Image 1 (cartoon, rainbow over the protein chains, first blue to last red):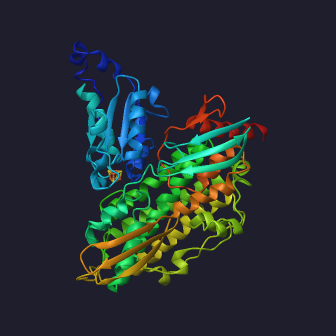
Image 2: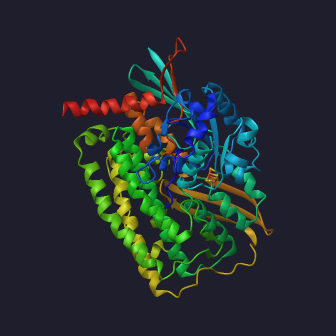
Amino acid sequence: MDTNFQLPSSDFPQIKKTLGFKEHCFKKSLWLYHFGGASCNNCDIEILDCLTPRYDVERFGMLLIGSVRHADVLLVNGSINTKCRDRLLEIYKQAPRPIVVVAIGACGCTGGIFAEGNTFAGPVDKIIPVDVYIPGCPPKPEAILAGIVNFLNKK
Amino acid sequence: MKTIIPVGPYHPLQEEPELFKLFCDGETVVDIEWETGYNHRGIEKINESKTFEQIFFVVERICGICSTSHPFAYANAVEEIANVNVPDRAKYIRCIIGELERLHSHLLWVGLAGHFIGYNTVFMWAWKYREPVLDLFEIITGNRNSYAMFKIGGVRRDITAQQIPAIRKILNALKPKADLLFGAVLDDPVIHMRTKGIGILTKQDVIDYCAVGPTARASGLAIDIRKDDPYAAYGMLDWKVITAQEGDVFAKAAVRFLEIYESIKIIEQSLAAIEKLPEGDISAIVKNIPVGMGCGRAEAPRGEVFHFVKSDGSNSPVRHKIRAPSYVNVATFKKSCVGQSISDATLALAAVDPCYCCTERMAFAYDAYTKKKIMDGNDLIRHSQKRTEELKRKL
Ligand code: SF4
């Protein structure tokens, strides 16, 4: 299993010089909020799996929380249908700024297999701005961790 | 004062976003209403524009936890139309995948149920022991979820002779862990107090509401498609249907636990059978699907999955109807939740295993008069966890 991710340490001094407000906010532990659209659950399960002993997302200081008002990262998975689009917008509105939006899975990124559905309301990035895409159907927990940690490293 | 507590649409209790409205009088739930559609993806319509082979990948994604049961039922339906004779080896492989799915699904449920009553250790344990099952999936199918194993007439991948010892090893390691978990959960006095006598469904209720799967079996109704209408290799294997009489949350948990052992038994027998059959004979050749209609049924971890397919002789169906088990089981909430306290209602909702798995989503409780928010999904869970704490102290 490849879970030896590097936290931002080596390039840290250099980052510090250019640290803007947004980067400053994401410097420490990230709190994640999970929004599951019209998904097939697999992405949801794999996100939950990140919490459990084998993957243990908390060692990166990340925590899955219950209210978007406390979140730094909004994880969105599943295709978005007409009924949950308004809810997603509402949740995005409630989120504190800055917020990182992560689209998880083929459904989150493009609509995936459900993009032809009659209730499909557009992939996530048509509805709210997306910062990180994690493709896969479903992405493995390693991929989800790698996606978010890489995003941290880039900052 | 009467209060309405909407649970959902984005709530930790349910996998699919669904809205439950609990009407409460003080602490007691007096009525319940539900609304679905947050997860509607138009799958039946999408399928009409796909070929028969492509549909496997769509039905697999109806529900990620049941990503074997739906292809299973769909394959049964199409094979009924085309009158296919599936090779025995493929039948056994199908059973292995189906039972592995039951293992991982029940372990997942145990973990989440533990979380709701405030036993996060149970959650972590159960999910830790679920990982080897996912490893097995990865060994056999190449993916942790969404296995893409099924095709018309058989399966896509064989289980080779080299893989069998590895599979056995993981299964054997799983048994003592299941024993441990089983003992720890079912002997705990607090869990007894929290789950016994909660959310009771009588046998008559279960029949009235057409409930299926462990929800029905925990109330003494021995309904199991694998026995009632044996498909694949289930008729050739030796196993029994687990039932309990009480119909409460505890009985539902016990039924699921015991089914874990039955599943391991089925997998072991299937592996033994596979060893005797020639390798590589995993699929029948199906040229085209004739005009006709077919029904397919399969026992998902949550109950009966039903697929109806109508073909007009072209390469895609003209109608595909799907009925999933949670859809009927959800209706039993009307019986199991009414009259319970709010903290117990949460558990009664969870006991049916309505295909949930997302952690924290949102749910708000509004005061019916002032429209002020008084409680959200986390509060509900916290409420439930607090109850456990209180019981613990009393003990
Ligand atoms: S990307 Fe795949 S696994 Fe994830 S929700 Fe969509 S269909 Fe399911």
